Image (cartoon, rainbow, N blue to C red; front, side, top):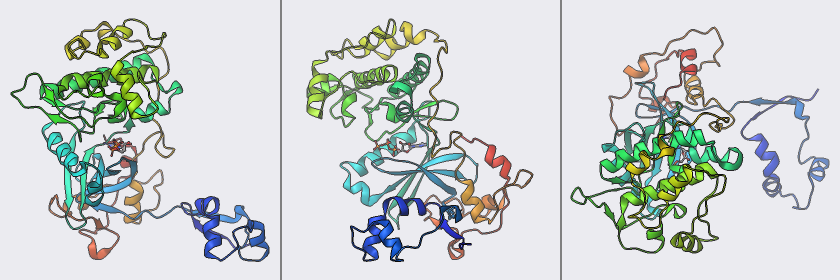
Length: 419
Ligand SMILES: Nc1ncnc2c1ncn2[C@@H]1O[C@H](COP(=O)(O)OP(=O)(O)OP(=O)(O)O)[C@@H](O)[C@H]1O
């Protein structure tokens, strides 16, 4: 019988599927040789796929300050976002990892990040993402923004939903939370300037969080009109006054417009204005000949028309939106809910930090009757609360800030949906 071989699950499939040319190159094999040619000359050994034993890849445990790192949640233009667990409070968070080098290559990169931190520090509202902590690693030139944990954004959900839209009742739920958060921001003189489904995240209990304050602006308290002079928002969500090149505009009305485009997108799966390129798109927005699909009936239709008025002075205010019949009306749950999209196949969005902790503490995968307890050591013995600690690779004993064995209340941790 053929010898059993072990391969790392993460390596094998890609090696076979994608990297044949790379292997040929490395082994000095002519590029036009088929896999069979290689096998017949004994360059590649064949094996029965049934004989392959897969082994889960080891997950080295890393910490940043008191946060234990988990899996990647997503990646934006500024950097990666990973799930983390606060070892003191056991609250799940998301760490946005920013590298100074990368920020320098993005126009206004550093400025936008500092702006986001400064604004988020002052904000506290149910519908606005909370900045929990900021950790700077001067040596590695990295910055970690610790944010409230969310299961995903409306954009992801739309992309996974039939017709790329939500049923009316679901769209109403998200839209009313958006308006709630926006009311708070505007009351504090903050213009978001980039409202769109991609910047609206959801927690496990369906609470909507307005996120991404990189391009937001805090207005002068002496300016009741809320005049702004710059915008870096996403083109499809920009209002006609910006598309037509106005020098100054009311910030409040920019957010109303982009919330109107967002609502249009949530209920129709389309955008009110399209173009092959930004120039054509801005031309369409500038003319503002809005077409609303016929299946959108009153009172939703008049809400969209009011929010997408070309003249900002005639455009609805937050107050008009909040008293509009579609906004105040109860929407019965008549069709199925669009669910959260799975994260790497996991519909439950289970905590991804656990396998790293098991690996660190050499625990076997938990069995059903294991009764173990989260140790207080992890909490007690961590470095004393500094917010500027370099990443500690806790697998390297010389770098471990604490390394007493800990026991985990496996069942408790696996089932707790900390948000
Ligand atoms: N607080 C969070 N909780 C969970 N996941 C998050 C959180 N913040 C961001 N993410 C995930 O990380 C991804 C990247 O987020 P990020 O805010 O860096 O970029 P983005 O807004 O998607 O794109 P860009 O910054 O390029 O506009 C998001 O798409 C989302 O999937």
